[in-house]
Image 1: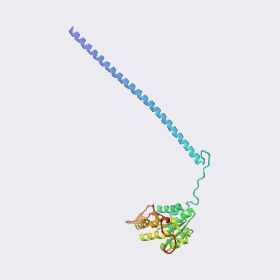
Image 2: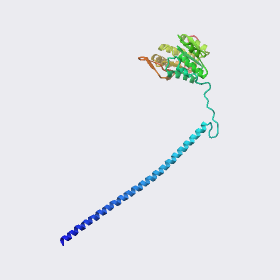
Image 3: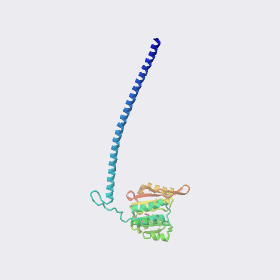
Image 4: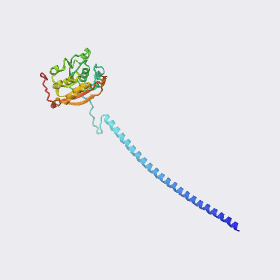
Length: 300
């Protein structure tokens, strides 16, 4: 009886343990199922929200596309020469008197200038549209060819050149003679006469003569009395130390009425160590700022 009771007790204990384990497992499965269901619910909400946002984005994109189509349509109407109100656009025309027919001279002019300097010189004359130009230091006439080509293209202006020993080829002279007067000699002695011969003061001057500091400074000072009340001066080889020093001295004298407009062509080269050449510097002259006489008399 005892053994039988003990055996029944072990059997009852095993069954109770199995029931407890089964109950715990069922509880875990229920929690897991509930977690999965909650995840599915949250994912469904996220999907719904994403779908809403995607729809909103699509609507926004369509709105942007519609706006772009409206802009394109308006551009087409403007290009066709009409605004929305039906008003005809005025035709766009280039300023009278300018066609760059002779710009190609920058490629063949016998000038001791970099290509950037040639282009800038041509463009400056076209942009400023001077009536009377002066060049100190003509040599072979390369920069004169560029200046006259620009004057031809804007349909106005003249050029007076001075050089101690000009060496212009006959063909090049024929290309500039219709607008140019050449004065052999030193600039200090002939500028007043050149101004009188040109019918008045100059409103544009290119200085490319004596490259010593006293020489360059002397050219600048000599030019001032024969300039219009408002004029521009361009100095070549402004990177050269001696020329640069002359410019600093001239601009630093408040009585000269000069404003340094800076380098307008910055390219430079050094054929020998420590000595730079090239570069164009632009100065603006105003007689209102300067007591320099405008008379063409002796000593001016």
